[in-house]
Image 1 (cartoon, one colour):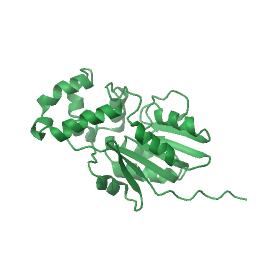
Image 2 (cartoon, rainbow, N blue to C red):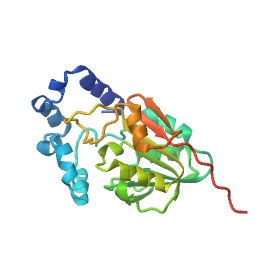
Image 3 (cartoon, rainbow, N blue to C red):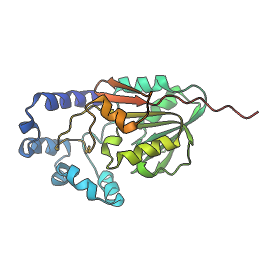
Image 4 (cartoon, rainbow, N blue to C red):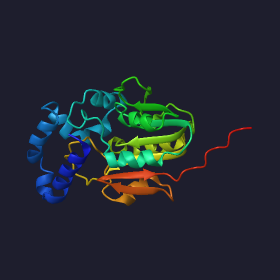
Length: 238
């Protein structure tokens, strides 16, 4: 099920259903059953309550064993957002890090149009296909030096993180030129079929989270695309 369809379904549920029904456990239970194939329904339904007490190992184990409709699609990005990010990549050779890369779909799309970029991905669970350098890492503790990547991208990840402020700090630390962040434009409900703990229904919530004046933040088909003001490319030593 592609992202555009799930965004449309989510919009209808979140905006048109009465909240007393939309956030009812008995109403949502059959949808969880379908989305997660009948597996670990109690844990996934109570994810927002449980995740804050988990250790890093428990968090990784949960995502490592997750089997759902959303986890089995190629990407959470919609095509319009992908095109917007690709067109905004700074010119010239460099290094690109995709944080929360999943199987590496976006990195593959970058490779098609920018073979001059060195590509690196990282995530809490290794599901990469071996076509790019991969590091297993938590976003709150990235194993890279300061400003070690010209471009840093992070798509559909911040909404899963229990400490988004620490995550944002790390993303900015390793980015030298430009940082892209994508999150869904989504209302808060306790029962959501996506393991989200942070919600950004309005632009200012993401802008405040990122905390960088002059940044751009665009609504693209149900997702926010935030982009830092590009820093000048450092001059090459003579």
